[in-house]
Image (tube, rainbow, N blue to C red; front, side):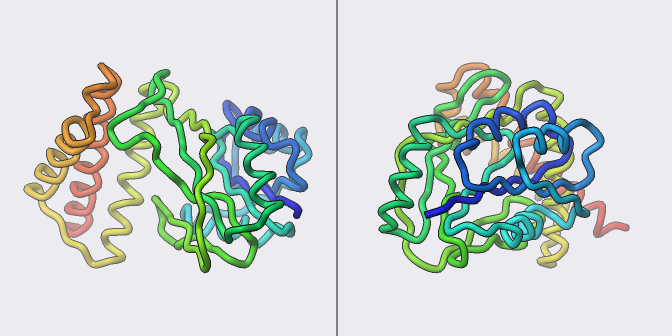
Length: 246
Protein backbone atom coordinates (compact mmCIF):
# COMPACT_ATOMS: atom_id res chain seq x y z
CA UNK A 1 0.00 0.00 0.00
CA UNK A 2 1.45 3.35 -1.07
CA UNK A 3 1.23 6.53 1.05
CA UNK A 4 0.90 10.17 0.00
CA UNK A 5 1.71 12.93 2.49
CA UNK A 6 -0.12 16.21 1.88
CA UNK A 7 0.88 19.55 3.43
CA UNK A 8 -0.44 23.08 2.85
CA UNK A 9 2.02 25.92 3.40
CA UNK A 10 2.62 29.65 3.47
CA UNK A 11 5.87 31.08 4.85
CA UNK A 12 6.77 27.93 6.78
CA UNK A 13 10.54 27.96 6.18
CA UNK A 14 11.17 27.81 9.94
CA UNK A 15 9.40 24.46 10.38
CA UNK A 16 8.72 22.69 7.08
CA UNK A 17 12.15 21.04 6.86
CA UNK A 18 11.68 19.00 10.03
CA UNK A 19 8.16 18.08 8.94
CA UNK A 20 9.23 16.75 5.53
CA UNK A 21 12.34 15.05 6.88
CA UNK A 22 10.12 13.06 9.24
CA UNK A 23 8.10 11.65 6.30
CA UNK A 24 10.92 11.08 3.82
CA UNK A 25 9.84 7.42 3.76
CA UNK A 26 6.49 8.26 2.10
CA UNK A 27 5.90 7.31 -1.55
CA UNK A 28 5.09 10.91 -2.45
CA UNK A 29 4.92 14.28 -0.72
CA UNK A 30 2.44 16.83 -2.02
CA UNK A 31 2.88 20.47 -0.94
CA UNK A 32 0.31 23.09 -1.88
CA UNK A 33 1.68 26.56 -1.22
CA UNK A 34 -0.36 29.77 -1.16
CA UNK A 35 2.29 32.31 -2.12
CA UNK A 36 5.17 32.02 0.33
CA UNK A 37 7.62 34.91 0.29
CA UNK A 38 10.32 33.07 2.24
CA UNK A 39 12.26 29.92 1.23
CA UNK A 40 9.39 27.48 1.89
CA UNK A 41 9.07 26.33 -1.73
CA UNK A 42 12.82 25.80 -2.15
CA UNK A 43 13.06 23.79 1.05
CA UNK A 44 10.12 21.60 0.02
CA UNK A 45 11.65 20.94 -3.39
CA UNK A 46 14.96 20.00 -1.75
CA UNK A 47 13.11 17.19 0.05
CA UNK A 48 11.68 15.91 -3.23
CA UNK A 49 8.17 17.22 -2.65
CA UNK A 50 5.84 17.92 -5.57
CA UNK A 51 5.05 21.61 -5.03
CA UNK A 52 2.13 23.52 -6.52
CA UNK A 53 1.27 27.18 -5.89
CA UNK A 54 -2.25 28.55 -5.72
CA UNK A 55 -4.43 31.16 -3.99
CA UNK A 56 -5.85 30.88 -0.47
CA UNK A 57 -9.55 29.87 -0.15
CA UNK A 58 -9.41 28.74 3.50
CA UNK A 59 -8.05 25.70 5.33
CA UNK A 60 -10.71 23.14 4.39
CA UNK A 61 -10.81 23.89 0.67
CA UNK A 62 -7.02 24.14 0.47
CA UNK A 63 -6.55 20.72 2.07
CA UNK A 64 -9.07 19.24 -0.37
CA UNK A 65 -7.10 20.75 -3.24
CA UNK A 66 -3.93 19.10 -1.91
CA UNK A 67 -5.83 15.83 -1.48
CA UNK A 68 -6.95 15.97 -5.12
CA UNK A 69 -3.29 16.16 -6.18
CA UNK A 70 -2.38 12.93 -4.37
CA UNK A 71 -2.18 9.59 -6.17
CA UNK A 72 -1.39 6.91 -3.57
CA UNK A 73 -3.65 4.38 -1.84
CA UNK A 74 -3.43 6.09 1.56
CA UNK A 75 -3.12 9.76 2.53
CA UNK A 76 -1.45 11.27 5.61
CA UNK A 77 -2.38 14.92 6.09
CA UNK A 78 0.07 17.01 8.10
CA UNK A 79 0.45 20.64 9.10
CA UNK A 80 3.80 22.24 8.38
CA UNK A 81 4.64 22.39 12.11
CA UNK A 82 3.98 18.68 12.77
CA UNK A 83 6.56 15.88 12.98
CA UNK A 84 6.10 12.12 12.60
CA UNK A 85 8.26 10.19 15.06
CA UNK A 86 9.94 6.89 14.16
CA UNK A 87 7.47 5.08 16.45
CA UNK A 88 4.50 6.67 14.69
CA UNK A 89 6.02 5.88 11.29
CA UNK A 90 6.19 2.17 12.15
CA UNK A 91 2.63 2.21 13.46
CA UNK A 92 1.38 3.93 10.30
CA UNK A 93 3.12 1.44 8.01
CA UNK A 94 1.72 -1.46 10.02
CA UNK A 95 -1.80 0.00 9.96
CA UNK A 96 -1.93 0.52 6.19
CA UNK A 97 -0.47 -2.92 5.51
CA UNK A 98 -3.25 -4.52 7.59
CA UNK A 99 -5.94 -2.20 6.20
CA UNK A 100 -8.40 -2.98 8.99
CA UNK A 101 -9.96 0.52 8.97
CA UNK A 102 -10.71 3.29 6.49
CA UNK A 103 -9.09 5.99 8.64
CA UNK A 104 -6.98 6.34 11.78
CA UNK A 105 -6.85 8.96 14.50
CA UNK A 106 -3.57 9.98 16.11
CA UNK A 107 -2.89 11.46 19.54
CA UNK A 108 -1.17 14.84 19.12
CA UNK A 109 1.37 16.23 21.55
CA UNK A 110 1.51 20.03 21.16
CA UNK A 111 3.96 22.57 22.54
CA UNK A 112 3.11 26.10 23.62
CA UNK A 113 5.99 28.59 23.98
CA UNK A 114 8.45 25.76 24.55
CA UNK A 115 6.36 23.53 26.83
CA UNK A 116 4.51 20.39 25.76
CA UNK A 117 1.05 20.72 27.27
CA UNK A 118 -0.71 17.86 29.03
CA UNK A 119 -3.92 19.62 30.06
CA UNK A 120 -6.22 22.43 28.97
CA UNK A 121 -7.70 20.25 26.24
CA UNK A 122 -4.35 19.87 24.46
CA UNK A 123 -3.69 16.21 25.29
CA UNK A 124 -4.27 13.71 23.84
CA UNK A 125 -6.03 15.98 21.28
CA UNK A 126 -6.84 13.16 18.84
CA UNK A 127 -6.87 14.14 15.16
CA UNK A 128 -7.89 11.93 12.23
CA UNK A 129 -5.16 12.35 9.64
CA UNK A 130 -4.48 8.94 8.02
CA UNK A 131 -7.11 7.64 5.61
CA UNK A 132 -7.74 5.69 2.43
CA UNK A 133 -7.84 7.98 -0.59
CA UNK A 134 -11.45 8.23 -1.73
CA UNK A 135 -12.84 7.51 1.75
CA UNK A 136 -12.55 10.99 3.28
CA UNK A 137 -12.56 14.70 2.50
CA UNK A 138 -12.18 17.83 4.59
CA UNK A 139 -15.05 20.09 5.53
CA UNK A 140 -14.83 23.39 3.66
CA UNK A 141 -14.55 25.51 6.80
CA UNK A 142 -12.29 28.56 6.59
CA UNK A 143 -10.58 27.45 9.82
CA UNK A 144 -10.80 24.48 12.23
CA UNK A 145 -11.70 22.18 9.35
CA UNK A 146 -12.63 18.55 10.06
CA UNK A 147 -11.98 15.33 8.16
CA UNK A 148 -15.26 13.70 7.14
CA UNK A 149 -14.77 9.93 6.81
CA UNK A 150 -17.00 7.45 5.01
CA UNK A 151 -16.20 4.27 6.88
CA UNK A 152 -14.72 3.06 10.16
CA UNK A 153 -12.05 4.89 12.15
CA UNK A 154 -9.48 3.15 14.38
CA UNK A 155 -6.97 4.69 16.77
CA UNK A 156 -3.17 4.66 16.72
CA UNK A 157 -1.24 5.13 19.95
CA UNK A 158 2.05 6.83 19.00
CA UNK A 159 1.80 10.64 19.18
CA UNK A 160 2.20 13.15 16.39
CA UNK A 161 4.52 15.96 17.54
CA UNK A 162 3.06 19.44 17.03
CA UNK A 163 5.30 22.48 17.57
CA UNK A 164 2.27 24.77 17.66
CA UNK A 165 3.55 28.07 19.04
CA UNK A 166 7.28 28.70 19.40
CA UNK A 167 6.91 32.18 20.90
CA UNK A 168 4.33 34.75 21.97
CA UNK A 169 4.58 36.68 18.70
CA UNK A 170 3.36 33.59 16.85
CA UNK A 171 0.52 33.18 19.36
CA UNK A 172 -0.66 36.75 18.80
CA UNK A 173 -0.38 36.48 15.00
CA UNK A 174 -2.50 33.31 14.95
CA UNK A 175 -5.07 34.78 17.33
CA UNK A 176 -5.56 37.66 14.91
CA UNK A 177 -5.68 35.49 11.79
CA UNK A 178 -7.89 32.74 13.21
CA UNK A 179 -10.33 35.14 14.89
CA UNK A 180 -10.84 36.90 11.56
CA UNK A 181 -11.58 33.61 9.81
CA UNK A 182 -13.84 32.60 12.69
CA UNK A 183 -15.83 35.83 12.38
CA UNK A 184 -16.21 35.23 8.66
CA UNK A 185 -17.54 31.73 9.36
CA UNK A 186 -20.04 33.19 11.83
CA UNK A 187 -21.21 35.55 9.09
CA UNK A 188 -21.62 32.67 6.65
CA UNK A 189 -23.82 30.89 9.20
CA UNK A 190 -25.77 34.10 9.97
CA UNK A 191 -24.66 34.01 13.62
CA UNK A 192 -24.93 37.38 15.34
CA UNK A 193 -22.71 38.85 18.02
CA UNK A 194 -22.50 41.68 20.53
CA UNK A 195 -20.07 43.06 23.09
CA UNK A 196 -21.84 41.07 25.82
CA UNK A 197 -21.51 37.84 23.84
CA UNK A 198 -17.84 38.56 23.16
CA UNK A 199 -17.08 39.09 26.85
CA UNK A 200 -19.12 36.13 28.12
CA UNK A 201 -17.81 33.67 25.53
CA UNK A 202 -14.25 34.82 26.23
CA UNK A 203 -14.67 34.36 29.99
CA UNK A 204 -16.24 30.94 29.50
CA UNK A 205 -13.34 29.85 27.26
CA UNK A 206 -10.83 30.83 29.94
CA UNK A 207 -12.81 29.05 32.67
CA UNK A 208 -13.18 25.88 30.59
CA UNK A 209 -9.49 25.77 29.57
CA UNK A 210 -7.95 26.69 32.92
CA UNK A 211 -10.30 25.05 35.40
CA UNK A 212 -12.57 22.45 33.78
CA UNK A 213 -9.77 21.04 31.60
CA UNK A 214 -7.15 21.50 34.34
CA UNK A 215 -4.93 23.90 32.44
CA UNK A 216 -3.60 25.13 35.79
CA UNK A 217 -1.62 21.89 36.04
CA UNK A 218 0.60 23.11 33.18
CA UNK A 219 1.96 25.96 35.27
CA UNK A 220 2.46 29.43 33.85
CA UNK A 221 2.09 28.18 30.27
CA UNK A 222 -1.28 26.71 31.24
CA UNK A 223 -2.42 30.15 32.36
CA UNK A 224 -0.98 31.78 29.21
CA UNK A 225 -2.79 29.23 27.03
CA UNK A 226 -6.11 29.84 28.78
CA UNK A 227 -5.73 33.60 28.30
CA UNK A 228 -4.82 33.28 24.61
CA UNK A 229 -7.74 30.88 24.01
CA UNK A 230 -10.04 33.40 25.68
CA UNK A 231 -8.60 36.23 23.58
CA UNK A 232 -9.18 34.28 20.38
CA UNK A 233 -12.82 33.72 21.29
CA UNK A 234 -13.32 37.32 22.44
CA UNK A 235 -11.85 38.80 19.26
CA UNK A 236 -13.82 36.40 17.04
CA UNK A 237 -17.11 37.60 18.52
CA UNK A 238 -15.93 41.21 18.59
CA UNK A 239 -14.92 41.15 14.92
CA UNK A 240 -18.27 39.63 14.01
CA UNK A 241 -20.03 42.40 15.96
CA UNK A 242 -18.11 45.05 14.02
CA UNK A 243 -18.87 43.30 10.73
CA UNK A 244 -22.60 43.52 11.56
CA UNK A 245 -22.23 47.21 12.48
CA UNK A 246 -20.60 47.98 9.13
